[in-house]
Every structure is written in structure tokens, then in C-alpha cells.
Length: 155
Image 1 (cartoon, rainbow, N blue to C red):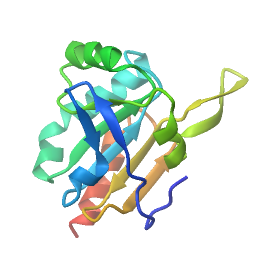
Image 2 (cartoon, rainbow, N blue to C red):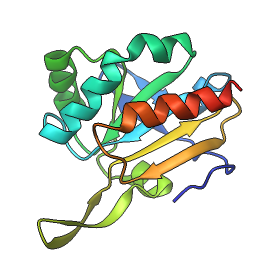
Image 3 (cartoon, one colour):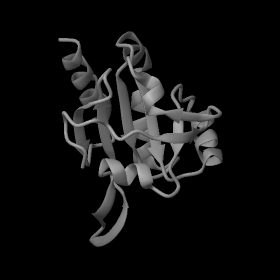
Image 4 (cartoon, one colour):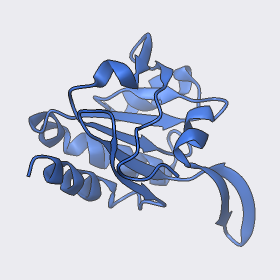
């Protein structure tokens, strides 16, 4: 996993809002980057809608919010429209970006072990360094965690 203080791995991924989003293009503002397993599933919907519901707070802090999953851009588009998500959802079908951040690996679900995307969050500072990282972030607690970490950047 990428640790706080390390440079955030750069990426360029297709967005449901059109075109590609590159982390390097967002330098100068904080970024809340979150990895989630699958569009339109209960936990992922809770996570995305909680972030959406605090959108004005993220904007007030000057932060970009980016969601990443292995789902397709088309799937992201449907999910985003259904729940009026104001931030881009990025397609990482080969999970290369998730792997670079340590958000892809072995996990357990209902007693079974498998490899997949691990719900994770990262706050990246204005200089492109990881300010905070949390693997296995709870879907309904991610917003609180991300806002608290953003507040530390402004202290």
C-alpha cells in the first residue's frame, strides 16, 4: 500500500464525465481518491451517496473527489446518473491503478477468500503526495474520514 508521505502513483483513466482524468493534472489542489468494488451495489452506493451528500464541503475545501473501480465507463455512467453523483468515476478494468495503490489484493467475504478490489481511500495533498491512506475503509464512514483528513491539510 502507498504510505502517507510517499508520492501518489500517477495515473490517467477514462472518466464517466468524458475524456481521461490524470492525477498530475490536479496538482495544486487536494484529491480524495477512493477505490470501490462495484457500481450500484449496497455498500458502494452508500459510500458514493455519502460523498455526494457532502459535496459542498469537499468543494469548500477545494478538493477533487475521484471514484475508481474495475467497472466500465458505461457502468459508471449509469451509476452516476442514477444517484446524481457530481464527481468523476474512473474505469480501471485491468486494476493496474488499484494495484499501484495497494487497493487490490486478497480479501475475505462470507468465509471465502478471493482476490479483488479492497475498499480504500486516499487523500492526496496539493503537491501530489499521499497525506492519508485507509484500506478497508467502511462505506458509511469514508466521508467522515476523508473530511477529517482534508481538515488536517489546512491546519
